[in-house]
Length: 392
Ligand code: ADP
Ligand code: MG
Image (cartoon, rainbow, N blue to C red):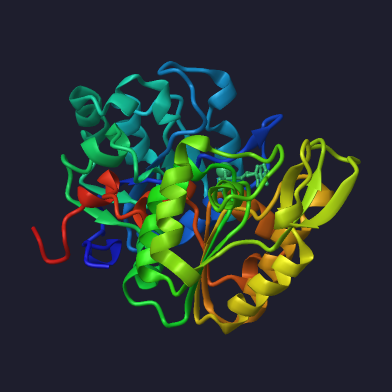
């Protein structure tokens, strides 16, 4: 990565504001998945080891620009303290004299600011709010890859007002994605699934430029199958994109690999009667909810040949057991492949985690939307604003 890194900063005695991505699921006041907190620890520890005074800021959920106790950072503070093993001083504000005071008083631990989206200026990237955020600090570090595709006050406004650098997690995310996109070891196999084609059309387009194979499952395969002239019953199809799908198939020829069989049901629910059918024989009134076993085998052969893999989007409705085999099969093949594997997308990552295969992937992205926008070739505002290495 050519952005200035937290490694490059002189940190001793400096007051550092760190944008982290602590947008974690919370239920009944407990963090139910602390992955994002864990992934931010290396940067926080580095800052503390180097003698910086550290405050962390993040958004959590979607409060409406005002304080809302349902989205308080309190549960995050408790979990962070356990994981970090250092005191965490949680404030009820993100700006103002309390922040300054807390930084002065905190020795050894970290300050956690309140949810940045309790302020209307956050999502508007309001200059006054950004200036107030920046005021108590000497330096800014962005380690929130999951928020880097948003031009908000904590991701962009503050970075324009303080000497800024990328944290270790942000660096790692960009290095893996750059590696996949710019210099993949071949064969490079991309796997795409999930719910919507329209969301991911730019991603498909871009991946077809660099990948040797693009395996398509999930709901999006039915738009392609229909575009080929097959009957897809009641499967999820985006009719507006049939022309686009046809064009992509022509351009990609045999690099685009579609399912040969699917699991169908009349209803998308637990206990529904299911059948496995060839893609030419999806019955009217039934919908495709997973890739079938022959497709799992076909995909597996491609995956085991790969040296590089990028995967986004589950192969079926994996939340329901009867439609989880495809996603499970693909996850196991990726785990066995020995390839450099990058998995992005909230649901795909949840599926991998559910199968206990996290440690078998080279890199699990903490940013679903951000990773897709990056793959698409879009500039991430939170990254673009950071200075290049060597720049002053
Ligand atoms: P990610 O979060 O990994 O980017 P998406 O959000 O695009 O993935 O899609 C995930 C959703 O797609 C899951 O909730 C899953 O149930 C759904 N899905 C996958 N295959 C199908 C299908 N054949 N029909 C309907 N929904 C599907
Ligand atoms: Mg999703």
